[in-house]
Amino acid sequence: MRSLWAVHFAAIIGVAMVVMLDLRFESILNSGLSVQRIVKDAGWWRAGVWFGLAALAVGSLGMLCVRMFLRKQGAASGAIIHLLGITAAVALWCSLALNHSALAWQGKRMRISMRVDQLEDIAAPLRDQWPQRDSELPGIGPFMAYPFGKPSTLILLQSPPVSSPLFASDSLCVSAVERSGAGAIKLQLGGSPLEDWAEWHPRGSRPRSFTGGLSDRHSLHSSAPLGHGWFLVRYNVDRTATRVDGIAKPSPDRSSRSAVAI
Image (cartoon, rainbow, N blue to C red):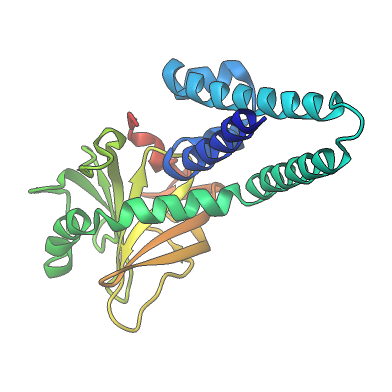
């Protein structure tokens, strides 16, 4: 029984770590629970880890329940203890299911906070001199500036990676840059359908809803401070039709510009 309990709680910890550290888990979970879709989006090895942990958790919990009900009569005190243990395990699973988004958000905050220096290398030249036309900058590469004449958005043609020694395989990247009227530099993080941004704000400024240079409306969902004026920010985006250069166009899903191998 002790071995089964050890296996089961190891599975709970494993699932919690996956939710917190796997940047694709939340977006794939939100897109549906189709096995074919999960394997296609996550890859065989990642899907295998997820399904293996799920099988380990369900199998060990099922065996614990069977062992509890098959205990001999006269061991009532032991049965009560195991029943309390199973109740606690179910409560942990329910808590994990209800709070997986918050756990994933804090995991991403932890990872991005370790990359502030790299984000600073991208944002620093843009703070000093914001581009006024299509051009190319070291560390950013070529870009297109919108709207013409007074640009506030840079669409990057090559997405600069933001890697970490601890999570080098993530290959996070920046897919677009926005500049607010207050001077904030907003870097859109590619590799996820979720609207996550790393933003630098001058003193007295904080993340808020905004309309981008492509007339796409970003409604603030949540933000978390990273230190040194940086924030991890998530937006809800209005994908209705916008107008660029006088032509009606749908708001682009700029996060899809970057295929990130995590």
